[in-house]
Image (tube, rainbow, N blue to C red; front, side, top):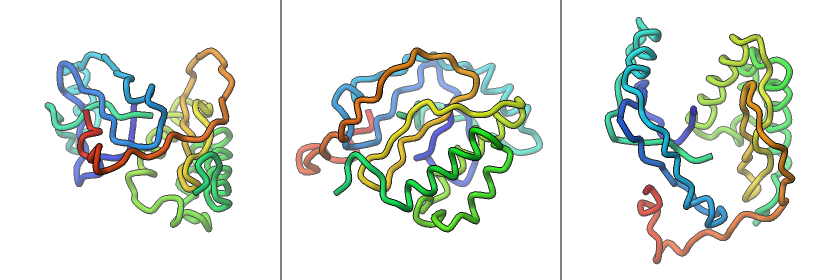
Length: 183
């Protein structure tokens, strides 16, 4: 899994026996907060990833992080939809050209920080290297500016119908401080 939300000045690979599940978000159904990813860690695989990346240095995260989650609450602003449509076009037909999105007129609004675009480059690179196209795994918007679109490569899953419902309300920060959602 490649995810945003941990933007630091280094590359690291999870190297712990039991990575914890990170819930660093608000505004989703309660059921999502109960999801756990009991995936075991694999130090040998982490070491292999670091070796393959040489000469680029890749560090080991031994417990600092974990596995991350997947006004107009149920639709996207025009600029978000335009950028998302352009991204989908690249990912499903020419993932090797995804970096061209940096020139898209809505790039600045859609990608205000690099941590939400860099993971996209990883999956595009993997798809391109595999000679494959990415498939849409999750689709939709929340709070107008957030695309929930997620991609996968060569995965098989049962088709489910999207509920089309709005995202859950944000919790009261006086009752649930943001730091307490990282469990």
